Length: 534
Image (cartoon, rainbow, N blue to C red; front, top):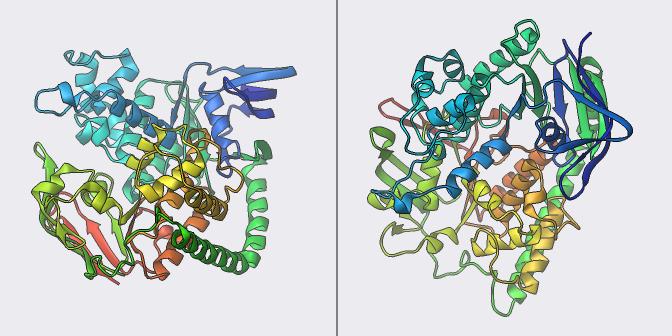
């Protein structure tokens, strides 16, 4: 049996420190490996080391051998976020006639995987023009978005674009990290078929890459998987066959189910105490720094929190939302669903104010028509937000401490630009403890795994008990433990009666019982949406 990768007594490190102190693992031809484990446990470090983004260094008498060397590519939520961050940093809209710099298109980005960097504004090379008929482009379903700017793509679209580039560049090892998160049913089916086909034929066809799959949780695992390596606490907690791992999972699930109700009751109690203690701190604060006007008798008391009348949004010939009429009433928790690219994120960004077309439409929030002189801060002080866009923006201030990330939720800022008060600090510590981050207040946001970052942003969104909690695929990158805790948190907040949920997810298992109203988007149909009440 041919050995592809040998890791014997090696450590994983970055420029500053050792991350995983010792690791031994081997990958042979004919094996299809799954890398799994909880957020922050070492899974992400392992795949980043294999892809060359972290350093794999032999310890004394250690050995590292990898036949793939530089012929490795990774498709992940982390990589997608980093790509969007690059596009934002290189945005030159203020220097462009018309004020819009669309940045690199999918076509240019994919072609760069073949021929290297394409100079901005240069004529398209033949390789880029030929992509429409490329079988890899068709396989990934990105033909229709080749000429769209990367920063205008949905989360699912940009990861399909990353996959197309990886396939076209003919890398020998392809690492797919949490590839199914945020994909619609059709895209998941395509990716599952793709994975099984490529994985089972790798080594037999020299044009096909070997594949390693990384997952946060045991969910929709492809049939082709033969072996599993699991990381916890920066060490290998399991390494062996799929069959043996499934036996261990069965034992864990039996134990977990026995304690489920007790743990849920305990978490509900912790949340209740945290909310009460935060309220007490708010009331004791001499300057009312944390106090919102949610319970102010002079604040808007209308049942209609949001109203959209004949809303139309698009750019160029691309129409995203067409004649949308929709109302969000207080206490009516909504699920928003639809295929990738159907306009879900655009819809939410009209509410958060991140899409400027809100001002040319008839949209009322908290009884006020948008564009009537209110500021974005007048709106955002009533909102709690978790989104891919927010995650990308927070990565750009990644040196912010976890405590300050939570405090920024009270101030509706990205990062913290004035020192936190004692009251804010005390409240932040209580929320961090609730989320399992006790004692980690001074750690930087950028040092966390993608999933841990997501959990922190969810806590940030909830701290001020907003009128509306907007959750755009909140469980992206979360392991099973965090996912269950976050879903419980959302349900308990909804039951409190103060906050109304607006929730986007493709995963049916993440739909909450309280979400009795559904906005379903149907692109390219007339009408382009459907409203369903359970």
